[in-house]
Length: 121
Image (tube, rainbow, N blue to C red):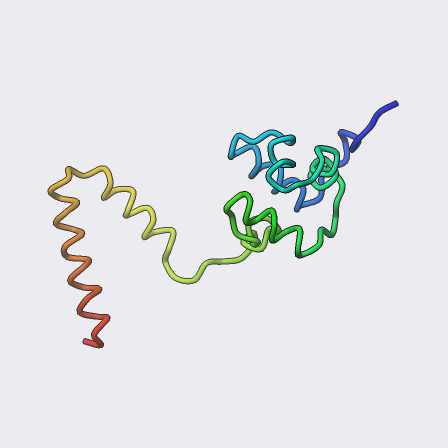
């Protein structure tokens, strides 16, 4: 007799997020259960079958894994971020490849610009 979720049926979004975050932090189900004060069987239930976990449980997991509730429930997925963040991110990656003195020069220019604009100029 097979126990748990059949392999052909995917876990609910919350469960897959929970399992991924747990594994990213190199925690086993027993270790997560200990952190949350629940049994391994309950951890398994939430990772494989729970479709509507209570907000209290989601908050508890969020705190234990030091992550946002949005990360656990998938709020960030599908939302378009405002502004030109992807290109800014790419530029920051390019800046990180520069020599330290050049990075410091760019940082000083950015800090001056931000300071000037923070004062309403």
